[in-house]
Length: 398
Ligand SMILES: Nc1ncnc2c1ncn2[C@@H]1O[C@H](COP(=O)(O)OP(=O)(O)O)[C@@H](O)[C@H]1O
Ligand SMILES: [Mg+2]
Image 1 (cartoon, protein in one colour):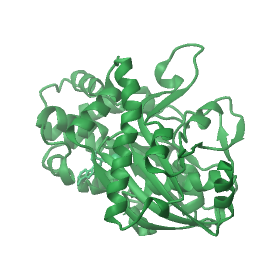
Image 2 (cartoon, rainbow, N blue to C red):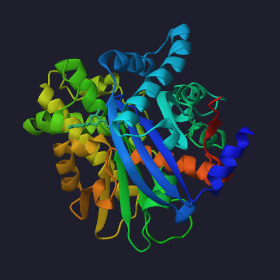
Image 3 (cartoon, helix red, strand yellow):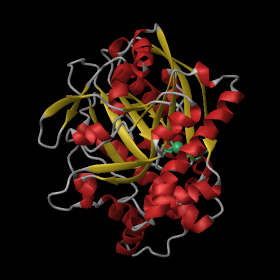
């Protein structure tokens, strides 16, 4: 029976799960092969292999277009919902072969898909319509193409239960990285930044978690627009050479999102080129050199993270901040973060024993582990009620 495999998995001593993450930066697919035993707060895990396969320029352009265009061609959307799974299946095959692994070594795939639209009410603002989010890349295709049972669409149940579908990382952060007695802030700086505050008190409450605003997305957009074919500000070197423009920074920070009370989420729909253009115009700095724009956006990312921790995290006099995601490679951003948080020790996530680029793939693998072990999680709805649900949808390979 097809369900036997799932029952066996839940009873196995350990499970090998391949986590896949492709975030709003659309830089590539992060893969992490993880071994889990047990589940919930008793979970133990080990990352056996991890890596990233970059998208080709053509693939990236197609995905970025879906993510940013006001209107899309429906036939193309339909086609690429299947095609993205072909790309991911081929990336999986190439990485497994590089690692000397076979598909049969993997018990489950946990795939996030590619968010091409994040539309909570906060963003779409249409009366009477619900929160919503959409990830491209059909999981039945991926399961069929790889021959591996696949768990996908982790965000939908969160939305159905009254959440915004993000940030989800908190569930894994609490299971994998909570340390009783120590106050830790976990920050993932991908396209968007989100924080999880682990206060170490073990009260059983869901930790404070929310999107703080930009990660790398605004900086990436400016580099692509003005310095193409360059795609990123490598190491934050351009930002390092520029000057922060105080008026532009103030105008960026004046957007209502930054004064909204969490829980809150955002996406490239808000943090878009027109958002930057408007702030440049408002501050009378439309002719600002690109290095100063990047210096200011870099500082903006750091300040909005630091402000969020101070305003909503109730931090002690000194504490630790662990940074994951691609932002950790931006040395200017890491410097700015430390500068904005002198009372904290701002560190690379690898200090917790997990590679910063593999952390989100590990998280989705952990969520698949939770699903097959039968665990459920609380979602705080916008009505203030908590509902207990399972995250993820299962696809069979045949
Ligand atoms: N060497 C680097 N220097 C500066 N920024 C980097 C570097 N490597 C990655 N990044 C930034 O990290 C982003 C990717 O981060 P990632 O965590 O994968 O985000 P996402 O989850 O949105 O895909 C890139 O788009 C880039 O902005
Ligand atoms: Mg990425």
